[in-house]
Image (tube, rainbow, N blue to C red; front, side):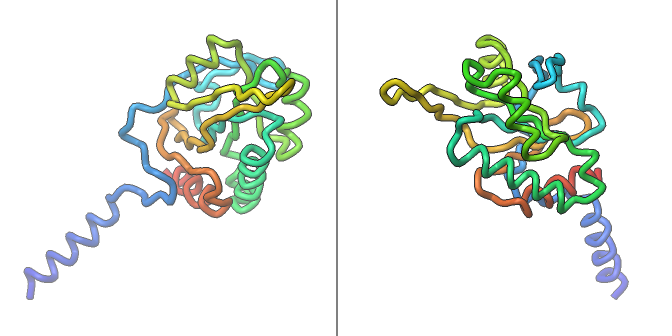
Length: 188
C-alpha cells in the first residue's frame, strides 16, 4: 500500500514539472528563430531584444493580403482581449514581406487599426531574406497582369519573454488557441 501511495505522489509531483501543453506546435527545441533588425511603423529601429520581458508574436504578411493577414491580425486582437490585463505583456509584430508597397506610412495606417499596441516592421531585401531564413518562412511575388500578390508562410511564431521561439500557431487556429498558448508563456 505504501508503495502505491509513493508512486502516486511521485506521478503527481512529476506532473507539475511537465512541459506546457500548447495547442499550437511546440517548436521549443527546433532551429527556428533568432535576432533581427527592422524598422517599425514609427521609424524606429527594432530588434528582438527590444521586447525582452514580453511574450512576442511574430507574423509575416502584407497589407494588401486579402484573407490570411487580416484574419490573423483579427484573431490576435481577439486573443489580446481574452487575455485582459495580461495582454500588456504581449507584443505583436507584423513583418511585411512586401516592403515595396508597404511603406512606413502604409504600415502605420494598417497595423494599429487592429490594435494600437501592434507594430508593423519592414526592412530592405537583405534584412527580409535574413529574418525569413532564421524563421524558415517563404515569400514570393505572384504576378497577375499589371498587379501582383504575395505568397507567404501563414503561421505565427510565439516567442517567450527570454527571446526563445517556442510555438508555431497555424493559420486559422483561432483566437482561443493564441490566447491559450500566450497565457501559458506568460505564466512561465
